[in-house]
Length: 330
Image 1 (tube, rainbow, N blue to C red):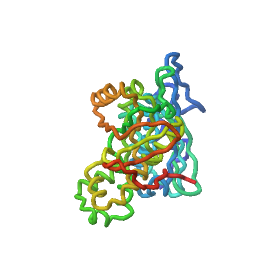
Image 2 (spheres, helix red, strand yellow):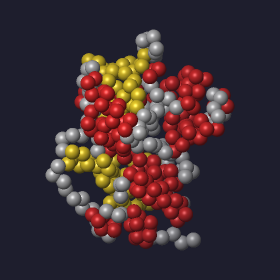
Image 3 (cartoon, rainbow, N blue to C red):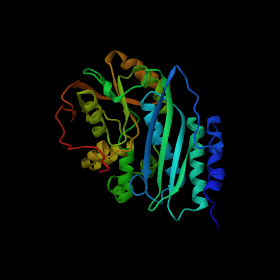
Image 4 (cartoon, one colour):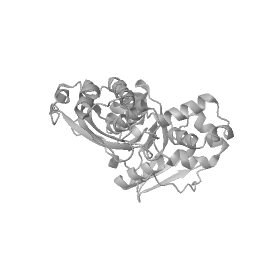
């Protein structure tokens, strides 16, 4: 079957996603975004590559949705709402039109769910595997964006959702026999695999983050490592109570069966939950706002004075010798 050329590919598959008038149906070299004097524009970009962030044989729709969602997670962590995105698609030599249709279907589904239309981008040939790069735009009331460097001693630490599912799902993908050793049931396995394939950006948390948090970031490279980045940005320390870190039933079963997996859960990354530092007098309002948004949240520790360091303690207050950093590309 003859594959479409670049112009036909864009017109047939990507232009229907460009629903914002500023995208001009992808017929121009640039999109035009209406300026709003009462809001700041938040911009983030993330790329995902085959063999690093996903397996080449993962479902095309899941790859597309992951590429968009990891960017939406950054937008939410700033307390912003999404406005649109740019897509750069570097296709390997063996791509097919069927694969592309499934990929675009995944983007279309998430555009509808998160109200984030395609604004433009580029399509190129990759000399190796698939690479997908997304640049996402969001808006937040002027000077209200929440940076990672705003944490102060005495702030409480919170995380949304559950931690470690994606990293443990990847562990199962690489070692399927671990499911039997850890006593997982089919529902546990399905949940952990799904969290690896498909992040859950907490876009509905943006208002709570913007309204109450002193610092926030999404957890992409592991809870402990990313918390360390927050501490370094603010010149503070952090103490995490391991027993308070929220786990899904499957993750809890895996850690109970193999306690060494706590390093995978706390340091493996791909959680895409939101980590927040919240002043004590704002904690109740923060958790109530998230409850109204239907988002689970757990208090996991507190911020202390510098120097920048992260300590994870057990139920008796004893430091755990985890030796964790964060995921590094280089």
